[in-house]
Image (cartoon, rainbow, N blue to C red; front, side, top):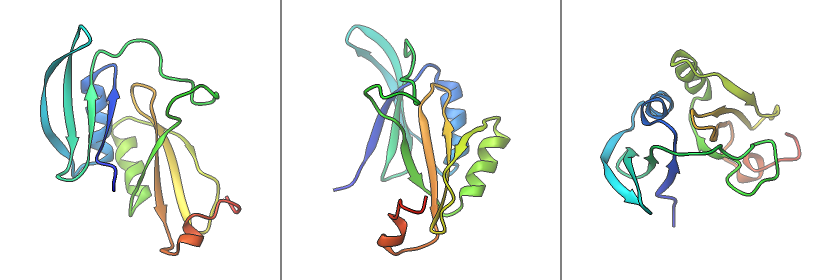
Length: 140
């Protein structure tokens, strides 16, 4: 089993796509349309590659959960990359700033960004293929 997609409700489709296109330059809009979601019309986009994608639904209302709290909901989701510094530079060049870096760890480097709707993403680069090193949280 593998994760195929995540469905996110966002505030604005244009700024959301600008963020995710900077993070994933090899992804594309796979499909898009409009739908009625419990009486609310909204636009949707499937953004990804042939095997995984994110679904964005616009016109989200309210506030995202406070990521520094213990409120229920998604704290963040993470993507593994082969070059975390390249992701950082692409997002910065697109006008987005990192939220914070992960703790020092000899086996990985990670950084967190918050997307335009307040959803936190982690990007992680591993320097080891050994599960006991990749998953070691005691040293950071």
